[in-house]
Image 1 (cartoon, rainbow, N blue to C red):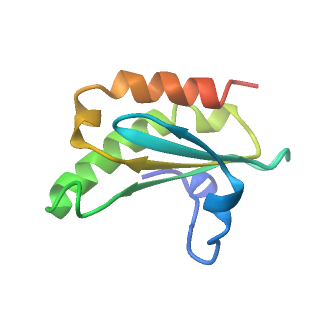
Image 2: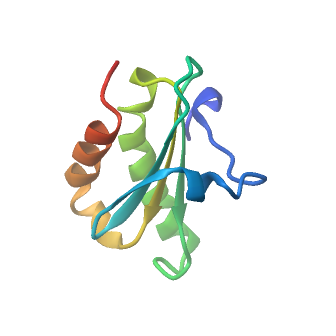
Length: 108
């Protein structure tokens, strides 16, 4: 689980996806909203039931993606990041997610 200061709640913020910049890959989509502030970065991960029917599988994917997010979030400030998983292949090739996250959110 992400530390509380790095958690992003998407409820009550439907405009996030319209205002953010989208980076699409085959296995995932990364939405980034840069607010140019000194507040800590926050992130969220979504995995639909269409991708993984069982909650156990969805939670496994979320844990792996959160692990990749935690390499980026503490070093960048003012960004809100949402990772939408498109395929379970992300488990086999998590290095592509880590490289894309480091491109999207360079260390300050």
